[in-house]
Length: 437
Length: 112
Image (cartoon, rainbow over the protein chains, first blue to last red):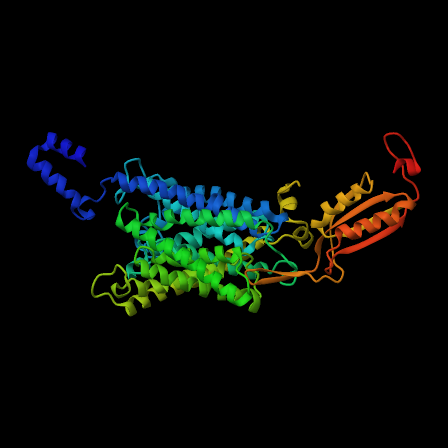
């Protein structure tokens, strides 16, 4: 700041410099498109953190939960999805999500193929647009990677690759555009700070649709299919917690109180969700498990995601506690009552959590509950908007995911053969073994 | 000659090895294995999926002994590997037709 002042002083004299100095305190619309290096540095960091959530956070979290014979298949799927989506996002994904769709801009963006419209000086708010492109890419990567949990241990690798490309193009990008890219949901005032609908509801719904379409794993639910390596699952989960600071606090797109508050509520929700799930499990099953506590953490994080820039610490606490309890019971219901093999519980944790978080955002945004809304904010009317957004996302995702799966099935099939599934995907699909003990 | 095969609890392996060493048994083969008899398994819970695991980890100890040492070896294993609780295991004594030392070609009791 001192340096800027002296530069201004030399160039435009004392009056001009003083005026220039004080414009720093004017709300940012007055300085739109002027690069803020604090914001930029933080978003550079957040981009790395969110990529870290996928590689290796989610990859380890998921791969520890499957049987040893399938450990590499999960790692391969996460890694290849990261690579594939990166290219897809560059070639046309970013344009679909954030481009100007002209007459159809309510639904989807267009143009910016190969991000040819983004130059080194292009801006997006106070950060370079190329950085915004990268930051958003990491979200586009983790969302299909989350879906892996729904079809783990039985989907063909080629099918996963095809599914990913089609799904990012037809589900992720449009919903992203509706909520963040200037589409109809943002016009309606739908609040989704960091991806409750765009990431978590989308991933959760797609996972359960995939689980149903592909069918349950051979032997489910009677055959034991215990996680083969809880240690790496917990290591991965821990990385998710840390990375989530980039996910939520980074979604502030600025470096300041907003990011700081988002980080705080995110963290409180994670802690609360962990303890709430642990308490439920301890009470109902007699012993607290480490899988339970980390799942509660993920539930807390996923549920606070849409609310993270709108609520205060009280909101973080209540949302986290609710997430731990609600997602715990949702998991029991899907697994034990409905007996759907959403293998890694993506729907009850991310799907249900995302819905819960989007709806609770309306409540805890209110100043009366410690939120950041202005006076005159109506919980009930915002709740209505949130509900519309939630239902629209669920409906679009479910229907389009179903059709994509059917299409991929016609193209290359979906599921491995029964004997291949028994032998294990690592050997059958990748000619590799995870461990040589 | 007899092959004394003992299925014991894994944490008792070191005690059994020491006890056998004390009575002059110079070699053995150990295998990690699973099994159950009257000992019930345990249950494991993973996010709502509960499994009852019947098979418990055990260790199989095999010792080739001369006929006149069998009683001593069996008694030694029982003392070292027993805890008094269900799941202590069993000992099987099998007849051993021939024993050969690969390096030297010795056979019979000299190869034990």
